[in-house]
Image (cartoon, rainbow over all chains, first blue to last red; front, side, top):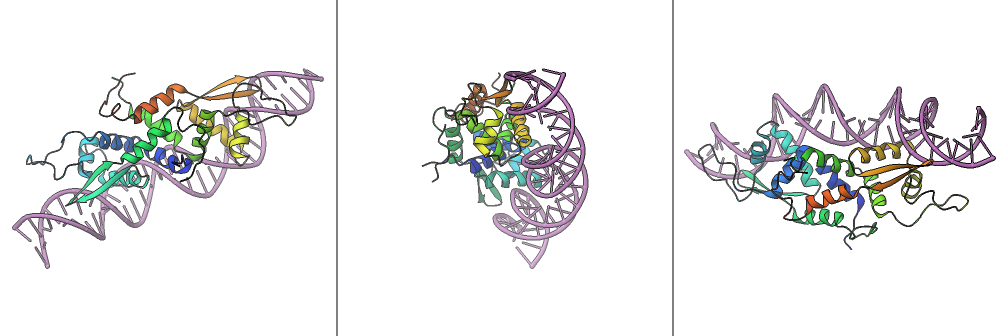
Length: 119
Length: 119
DNA sequence: TCGATATTTCGATATTTCTCGATATGTTGT
DNA sequence: ACAACATATCGAGAAATATCGAAATATCGA
């Protein structure tokens, strides 16, 4: 049964508990229409946001890309996002199963008192 | 246009991002039938779980109560729980508005791209 | 008021986290 | 092979965090 699994869920919350990561995650969830074009105006290299796009669109280069990279890894380790290589870029996306799981956590009546059902 | 307010939401997630706090919060959410009786078998002093009950029922005295107190304050500061004095005890409860807010965050389709939902 | 019980605050400490710049790795085009 | 670009890893420093025991505060009952 789909476990609530406190520790694993806590890892997800912890990942979302940093403002920088939460903004990244929201950005990826919403995955808006193409925001970043090349300086030459070319379309994005793939059908999803990339790391550079996150740096540029979400933070306007306020953060070092090593910092963004760190947070992306954190989000990935928490199971919240996926990263797929596409050429030179990494295409990012929010994991729908993670969203479903978190939604279930707050679904009133559902996850209450289920304690630990393990998988 | 108070926005989804990433920072404020992140504070909530951060509070839930610690396993100890997550367990406390789950316990308060579920607010199960009376678990702790006095050593004399008396009923609980109020109609909700107390700090001592959290220490005892949730952690079996594995954590110092100063530690639990610290985490309760953290949860309160994040807006996730309420604490009301009732005699010698503090009666604890999860805040339903916080639950609603977090549920809304994960509600598919709802909070996506809303960016600014005002309060 | 005094003692017992419940909870919080304080000080200290070990660990973790965020951030950066510098460097390394991987990929594409020439 | 090499240059250019995108991203990741490393090392380090500052700040935040979790935890505890000891002491302080608050409330009740005798």
